[in-house]
Image (tube, rainbow, N blue to C red; front, side, top):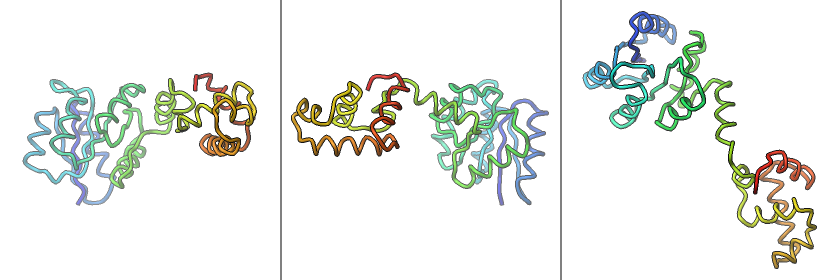
Length: 211
């Protein structure tokens, strides 16, 4: 039987969540705690909780600190963050701390239940809007080579391609055969998911980053 723990300090919000969670599946058991200490005591007495829904804005021990404690003391229990703070930095920090999902408090009940089902199925849940922002933020500052996983040799070849060098010129400059350059070029196209030199150069210049 599924058992869910909600850690939320506002009584009305906690009670609303406990009621809403009854819709996740028949026979679900829901538990509520107003702070980190109460939640840890509950878990110590009843460690067969299947998933935890954790508010970040807790009195005393913060939700983020509680997340760290949970990952150390109860590493097999997935913890999903529920928060009114849904900026990219907060989401990234929660994921780094080991959160199994992030649900904004502005989400509908149906969205929350769907998110929890995903986490229970072994997925990491982030709403599409936040996922796109996090992905863009993680890519920001990366070089073209880092973005596409190019090796040092491939990176050097791409740098010379962007300078307008031909395969023969690149081979002479790197003291390798033209065939080796062609192998590098093919690998670059595959890594960047393009089919020709023009597309590769356009994509590399679009990022406007050093290789």
